[in-house]
Amino acid sequence: MNNKRIIIAIDGHSSCGKSTFAKAIAARLGYIFIDTGAMYRAVTLYALEHGAISGCIADEEKIEAMLGDININFRFNPERGASDIYVNGDMVEGKIRTIEVSNCVSAVSSIGAVRSKLVAMQQEMGRGGGVVMDGRDIGTVVFPNAELKIYMTADAMVRAERRYKELTAKGDNVSLEEIYENVVSRDKADMSRAISPLRKADDAIVLDNSHMSVEEQMAWFDREYQRVLGC
Ligand code: DC
Image (cartoon, rainbow, N blue to C red; front, side):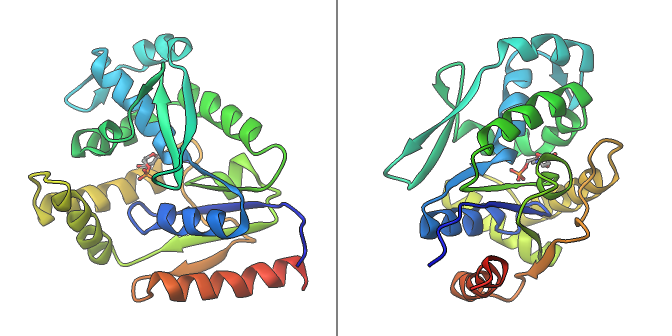
């Protein structure tokens, strides 16, 4: 087994199972998993709680001014086998996954100052290799030299159904229609924003998991990983 510790960049549409896939890969390889979407969600939550977003319109100046007050870090939670995200010492893993945050996160993630701060943090976290990082701009902006880049996608309705199941299992009162609209509108916002839009890096390989089980995705990954490491 080759023990070179590489950077694995996973980008793609919202709700297509990037985090589940990335987490499974990280566990298999003994790598650190970094969910960069959680970081954008954490800034959105903070902005919502501090009156800098109203009706999902973000007050850019206010958010930019409060960036210095937002201290984000991850701590490994052995029960989940993944890291929980903390903002100024508070664990906000549950609070950042609500539909309210999902609806407003595009307005925050399109702000240049927010992206610069989070990208710099992500580059620092991945500096030594041995990381699986998932997001929208990892292979294009954060780590353009990542050794393995994966671009994930799945049919929009399949993605909406998956997220609907997750949220209703937690007891959230949401409809499939509203989730589907959120998925489609976030795809549009992610792909059309001026700064670092979601796009497939030229050297990324595509994984469309609409009709694949997690086991099938892992078998696909193993083949690609072996290929990249040349063994
Ligand atoms: O992966 P997610 O759905 O939890 O991400 C939440 C939002 O954050 C998503 O709508 C787009 C944004 N995002 C981004 O702009 N860049 C990243 N690297 C990760 C997420």
